[in-house]
Image (cartoon, rainbow, N blue to C red; front, side, top):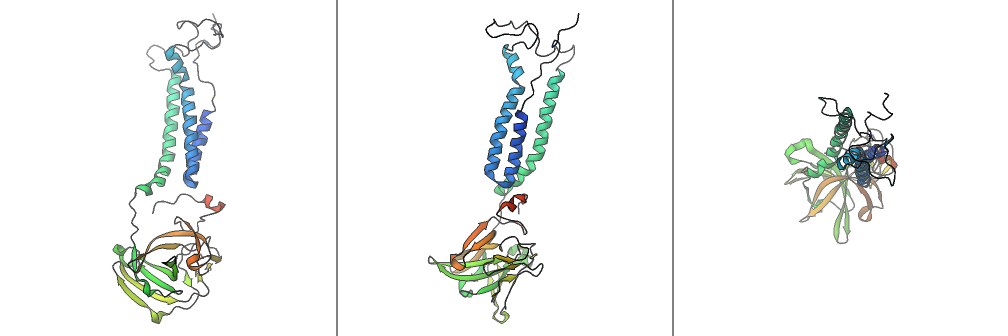
Length: 320
Ligand code: FES
């Protein structure tokens, strides 16, 4: 006798859209890690919701079978609304009876293998990205202040080409150059402009477009190493010898290939002495001197946009 249609076949879950939503959530998380935390948070929410619905869908058959309420599907004994419940020992089996010696039906194995493989692939993709993102939080990053000497060494309104040891423990190899201008006082506090000499195009050292007064060179020995100070008059701003990038006296890009303004150093006044700390990136500066409005960003590499739509095209920066 021919078996009836549906008999002897496993009852597989119907096609579902939840995996697609889950995948979209994962993509949102990855894009969010690069672009912005709110986007990543939305991705997490989407992933959790669709993941829950997917797991619920996949495991629905087991849960129904466990509580013995699964209605028969197809066949002459399908349950109808209002009809008395079909006894658990009647109707079509949800899953085929395992063959003698078979411990798990093949469909269970395939479902488990699919979920397991998907989890492994998702882990391989996401763990390095998440690690890159949160590692800086747990890293003890040294940003010691570098003492540059008394602020009286910096004449108001004049740029001083200042070299110092970025990391005294590394010696001369860590020597850096900054263009520092004393802007006078703002709200009774000393104000300084401290420009990095690293070009915002590819990192070449920019130079003052104007004379440097070497004969007035000062040398200071501070607790963080030797400091040299040479007054300069960059009337034409600063220029890069590599590809012709040009900046004005506030560090704003005025010509050439650089994509943003010059980076700056944070500065501190300690007992009448000037100290510099970590560097940060700047898209542009409005105004000048003590009253300038600095559009400040986390330090990024040369050539990288920090604002506008172009910033979306840059990958995560490795921890530095
Ligand atoms: S590195 Fe300065 S313009 Fe290219």
